Amino acid sequence: MQIPSLPVSDSPASVQFDFATGLFTPFVDVVERRVNDLQEMFHDQAAVGELLAGDNPVVYEIRYHPFLTTTSDMGLGVTRIYPGQIGIEYYMTKGHFHERTDQPEIYFCVRGEGFLLLETRAGDFEAVPWKAGTITHIPPLWAHRVVNTGTDLLVFVASYHLAAGHDYAPILARGFAQIVVEQEGVPQLVPNPRRR
Ligand code: M6P
Ligand code: ZN
Image 1 (cartoon, rainbow, N blue to C red):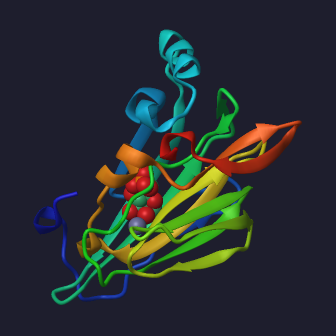
Image 2: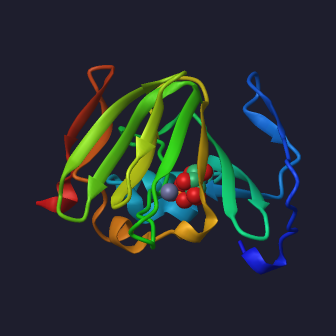
């Protein structure tokens, strides 16, 4: 998202969110992430290959609205993660650190259930059980990823400074300390095999 090309307004601004669908209007940008955009994140590469040989489904989509004033840059993002698994691992977001080390974020789960995974570069790790109504403050320096363990959409609202930036590289290289998989019919957190 190129901040300089977006409209700037110093007046209050609103969008309208629909709890039933997890959509809001107006939005400025929509990004769709399919299996082929996320393939190296998932543990079961054979299962990834099968999905890519098929219809390469959408895993999640994000609608963004930037609120730019002459002195500030708030971002609103609403992410809808579809229910699904690749092998036994549940659909999830890529996850990222912020490029800026002084930037927090608020995540608000409005629909569905799952986990918010959080990890620092030093290796501190937390998995927060999530359901509709859970609001989590993500402090600076904690990478964040959302996992949908339900049979319905998981929808969450994010509020952050656009200037925070996204650093995906460490997550793509190593993942988080734990992965979320279905075992005996229920979601389980297990050590990430890529960290061994
Ligand atoms: C939220 C915000 C966005 C982020 C999106 C999807 O809306 O944190 O900044 O882009 O979630 O997460 P990711 O970028 O990790 O795929
Ligand atoms: Zn973020």
